Image (cartoon, rainbow, N blue to C red; front, top):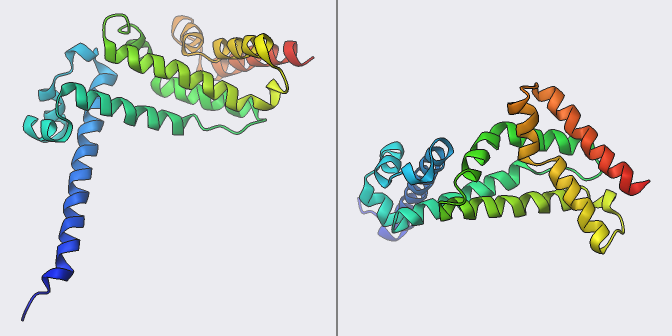
Length: 201
């Protein structure tokens, strides 16, 4: 019985490519999990490799260096966050619920990174992108409320909405004050509604 090599080769190549992609994803998830718990300066290639169940050489073959895997992990995590923050327009309570969910899941991680941004360039890159992402989210979600505002008035309103929904606002209420998630959500909603009422009345 003969084997048709032409028909089996694409399958073998596809299976190999899938295996490589799965290994790459596992390495990146290991890197993200490490940086969620520890300062970036304490995250080593050896730790990432061990968590992913691969060798250091496999990590280097995939990403070239420690900086390479950290950078790729940052991009993957930011993509995850963008999906988590998806919220409908014209539903202010729904938008606040979404951002509270995000802060509950990632707020402490964000605060850990913010504490490193002056000393670690990777942390600075993550926090800079995070701030830009949050501002873009505010502009997108509250587009109906922003209406035809332009110039400095629009920028001021966006600034106020960014502050009202920021991770530091969540921290003050949730961590410093020790309030429940439900109470924090209600107070953040009041803040946002106050800003919107001032600018749309």
